[in-house]
Image (cartoon, rainbow, N blue to C red):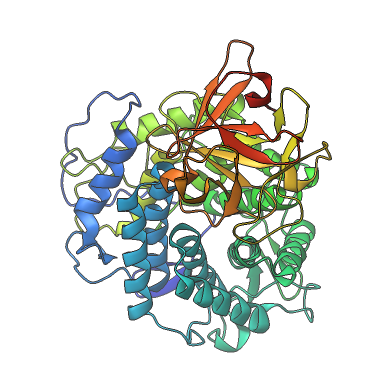
Length: 510
């Protein structure tokens, strides 16, 4: 990921020693007092779109520059739209993501060997594989696989440093410039490998995700403090500079592998790294940087912290931090356009030449900050029937239409389900083994119909109403069919039937 200085193309600089550059051609607009409220995430995303989105096809470079934000920068902007879809599940946002990815591929078609920066390829592939998981468009998956496979083949190197992926390919690095392996290329491609595994169940992608993670852990990570280093050169010299985008990317990587494997090591790494960032990379609790040459700063932190807090119900530790930053973003926005630059603790300047990517982090942060502290429903659970203590289980099945079972508790990934909420208050329930959604086939109102798994679409037949009962257990009913989950008579299947409030229809989330 390159940052542009006058006449020089360079990589991100470290946080230490950053110049606090105020880039502005005019005075900032008046700033209101702020507190996070319902609608603020929409306010920021709508402001971003109204300012930079062109014909729902691409984000332009700046307010004054109508050209599409190119290559990796365009990928970063697309991921903001993907963040918004994660929050809402809306058909409108899904259609936008689909159009943005199609348009991006038309402007930046493979092959991508011309780009020697492997972190660029990571951003390309990451936007596309997330686009696939949102839309189901197979072309996005195909090109994400191509991008990862290409970067892995050319970039993974064991001659120097015992492994790792080059930041910029040595043969494409201008003479005299640094040749190194950095967190951006390794962690970015590591996340891509995780999402490809979720999408294809090809073991090679999980193997490579683990291989990259192990190398990063041993070479670019301080397991005592949680600090993530920038990179390592061929001679073994480690750049121990620290930056919020590096820290956030590692957190998201660690948490994603944890969701796939259930490894406590990855969970602890993610949490330790969040705590390091909170202590060492904020200014009075705010992730802020007003250096004008930074294209982005905290969008990866928004995703890493947001996913970790959501998936693992860590709101007690981090919700106040998330709200504090959201409040700063809202307070310091340009109120004429509802956009906030990277310097979250400073008024956003009315400089219409600032790039769209410089506003992406603020929008992303609002997408992952709930307006109220979430309930205990959100996150990963086993779903246990109150009557017979059997657990909802996908078994060892990956394919669509496979029936959902009930089995004895084993604590395997096939018995873990991630609850995420839609804007309408309904819930998505996604397997931590198959990465497919709990689905009522066709939304049918048929009593005793067995539930299945299906590629996630967030259509009404995959949306669930989860209502707490007086005893603390839950009624779980399908939004489309209106019928409630219960165990079959023999206790072996998950079915639906009209609500009767009996124990075989009550569920505990553990």
